[in-house]
Amino acid sequence: MSNEELDKLRQDLDEVNQELLTLINKRAQLVQDIGGIKQQQGMNRFDPVRERDMLDSITQNNDGPFENSTIQHIFKEIFKAGLELQEDDHRKALLV
Amino acid sequence: MSNEELDKLRQDLDEVNQELLTLINKRAQLVQDIGGIKQQQGMNRFDPVRERDMLDSITQNNDGPFENSTIQHIFKEIFKAGLELQEDDHRKALLV
Image (cartoon, each protein chain N blue to C red):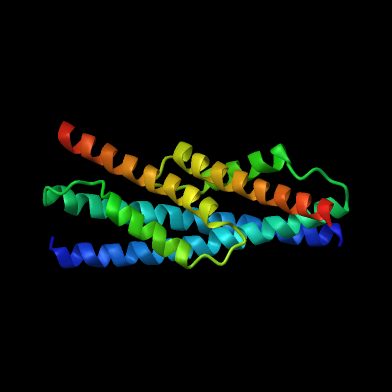
């Protein structure tokens, strides 16, 4: 394999990085919208059962190469960041 | 807002989760391919300069709602998992 192939793969990787960025922020926006509705309805923002269901559904569709444990670890970090964003929104709402 | 709207947002979230799963594994496959070429060429698999460049490029295109620090944290976890996958491949190659 040549350096041209390496450069091409790196370009592909950069594109996937940008697509991931877009999707991660799209997810964050959805989580904010859901948090807003839950707040209006006086529901708890953190729902461990729903989180477990999402993780199960994700790993059921995992064809690799990442192991399920790795996929779960990455998604837990994404979930945690989403929850922190909801908490920030809630704090800002309280300050208004 | 109604529960129907909440259900709709949750469906959207589930779809984004599956798209993220697909992209994260697509990225892992690319990282494996790149690792294979680097190994053939006797190059070091971990390249901190390239990693920093990728993080800079990602955060430059970040329009939120996640902060740059959060995006960097999530991507570092994805990078780390990719590196671990390359190391596993290398260990398996040595055992053959």
